[in-house]
Length: 445
Image (cartoon, rainbow, N blue to C red):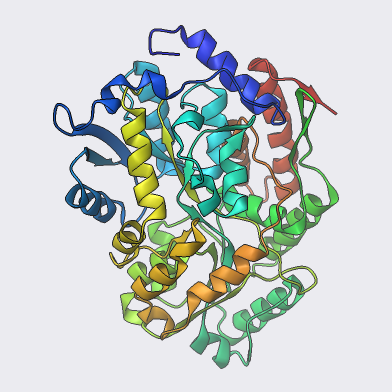
């Protein structure tokens, strides 16, 4: 299919992909469309446009452009997805001026596919390439038997905490269970009434979703040619009730993610822990240069103390539906996600602690990471163990934009007592089911 094919056909193909994940090969775009990219080297390098926001991305682009001559990348940094990047990409796709390739996180990829915004790159992916990635990452980028993106990183959950503050509160080890986490939160608040063990982010539902994932929830399943949607299972209810009580009892702060309020609380020692993911080590390192050596990373607590993790974020490289240079875009994405030079450029920037989706790059990532904040702790071995515990039975739905907007709008009133987390989740299920119907996607159960 070429750019002259009506968008209706692109959309119907994408809808089929996300409606029935058990489908085999789809009628999709192939390498035969890429006449311009195939001409690379004949008329000079092919120049592609790339939009992204992940830490270290500019360094990766610079390294790629310096390493070869067939493809050149013109990079534009945009806000993170939740901060407006996804809206910018969607608007560009609708206007017909989208970049050739852009970053999209795993949760949002099915949504972009269902809207016909990205290209099926199955025929452009070299044989054996997917074998280089973690199975969980391949699973999240494969819909309807087709490949819609190349994975950059996995994002196992991680708990970061102030060692000195924990010691001062007579906490000798990081919590292994959520019950211990609550007990530690009480000790920290008792030792310093202004201090809190962590923050609940009302503007970023992905943190709560990762908690539900870790607990064993399955919000989306496919049944034949339809989706089953269930946000009110016991695992989600227990997760919601746990965090509701933590908020009601004032044991965690409630603040927007990565806001000035959150940053100031960390810098002042009023927030002494962060429930994040592997990439959070880089975020904290760049945020807290004056707290060198005071932090440590630990596995995320679980209900029973046995290892289990969801994924909080994690990024991919997707090719926009109208790109005439998809072959070159895939070449760049492959280099950025599977070469030692690509991952070294990203992590040596000093701002990224991405855990590569290609396991062979783990040694390079570990050696490139500047972890002064953690006093030389081997955080990458911790990430590696956490990645092994990521539950494999979770799927993201095809309308996560609507799901997350509903949660975000409702979460805004949680601290003021105008709603509850579980009520928000039930409302998000209703909004999601309605949106799937509007898109012509069948819903069962």
